[in-house]
Figure 1: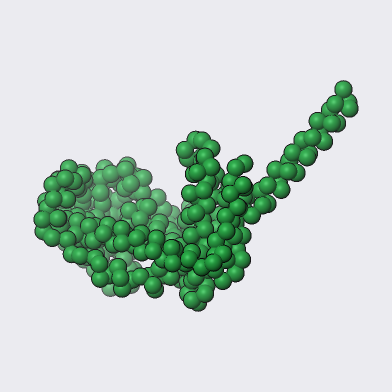
Figure 2: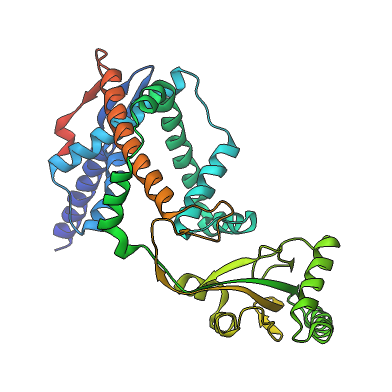
Length: 355
């Protein structure tokens, strides 16, 4: 029995050694300006999240497709290196911040962006590396094909815009919104800081009361003294333009149910009582109430944006972006094909796709 057990252990050891050897094998070699091997292990790492998302192991044909995409990426990166195209840390930060803003559906502050990087923890360097690669590929592609793409993009006609609107207008709904101004008195984690903030906030409440004009005067004094511009929960005073709050799940999570209930129950021009919200005491005044509605072509799609965009403009920009993306994909295919024409630029070892 003991001999059998030892024999089994030895067999397993040999199996794992063979498995490790296969993982170390080169499944493809990219050689535009230098030899850049892609190992079985690297390909498996690319496939793992995709297989997990689909809940199954990929076929050999699907592995080959993923390998081709990885080869194309390596080719583009080598071409960018050959042409001395680089990206700066500032460009990487801007791209990551833009991506996170798209995910959140709003612009992120520097503080929020820094927190997002901290939340990424040990994955942050990998995230930055991936962003750097994507930026390099994008810059290389545009250096070669931007003029071609710009010349091919056509302005959508009014008929194109109307057709898209008629097909999708049921999705163009603006939720209930209020535009408000606020005075924020922040406090720290310690009780003494909170007590001092409460004294200041109570004094402001007594001075303002329910008087809308006195609220405006207090905001102007705050701006004049350099208190600055704040969003809900921030520090200081909001500008005369105010901020827009939507009644939806995102703002519920950001601001809390109590704040949203108070904001949407105030009448236009009405001043709230003191609100404790997060790490600040707030006084708010509703400047404008916008009821839920299905948007028409000339309505402003997101009034909170500094530069208002109508539904018509939004659709036009979207159609142009869609057109440009299609041309970009075509240009990418053309460029990859050009890069792969060289002799021995790409070598694939098919036998290592079958594991």
